[in-house]
Image 1: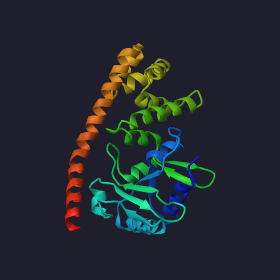
Image 2: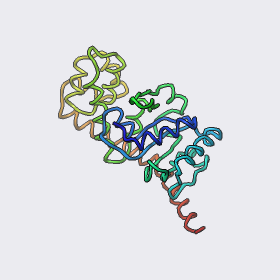
Image 3: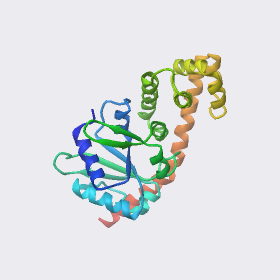
Image 4: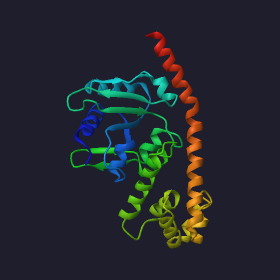
Length: 250
């Protein structure tokens, strides 16, 4: 169950008409891949009108930017995240992180078309689609890779059989457990051979060599971690420059 402070944050976002999709830890909770997260992470449309709506929500939440960058459209457009800490009653201490660009993913309009709408029983929440969430989690952080494994395995175990081609293709693209990936490859060899054009390690899954597959999955993870490091390197330098400017003005 999503904790009520999270729902209060999301209610303010919805009430003010902010075009946003939930991602991060709370999205993982809703998809069954995590047990708890106190942060609210959103990907939003970065335009003047939507940012005005976000400012209204931030005001309702008595949320204030944490350090740098400040809450300005140009920083969102650069790919940086804006971090807020909430102070309003019922959401004290809650962190709200907002981005408008995600590595490896298209613009917001495409993400919106692919979104998942989840009914919690108390409200509906617009969430980054599971495939997009998995892509967003392919970072250099150690904690994200076990989360990817849990997210995809949860989908694999909870999906009714026979599964759709879309579900099978998702598992073949994203499963990270050799035994499960081998099983899917064996059950859907045509899908496996087709997707192996983009993910060659699937041919090893089809051959049933789990030891070799485990090694190839580690190499795949290493490549994604390095790609994320390279993506964030100039953005980290930008943040350091902003921090220096912030301290010099104090």
